Image (cartoon, one colour):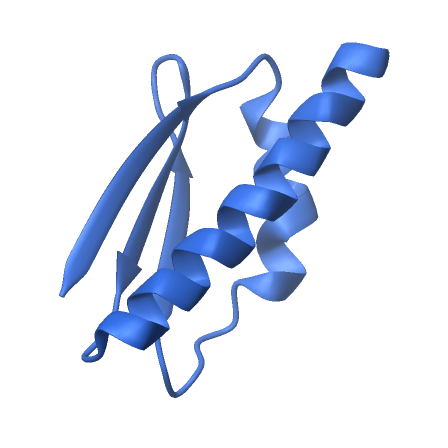
Length: 73
C-alpha cells in the first residue's frame, strides 16, 4: 500500500531538514519526503494498513507543528 500527500508550506527545506532524523526506515513503513513546487510531498509505503496509518498520522502531526512554528515567526 502506498500513500502520497502534498502539503503547501512557506519553508519546505526547513521542514524536510527538521524531519530527517525521523525518516529512518522502520519495519512497518518507509517514508520519503521531498520538496515540490508549493511545499512538500510525503510518500509512505507499507505492507499493512496499520503501518501506513501510523506513519501518516505521525508525520502529519509533526508537519502541523512545524507549520505552526512558521506562522509564529
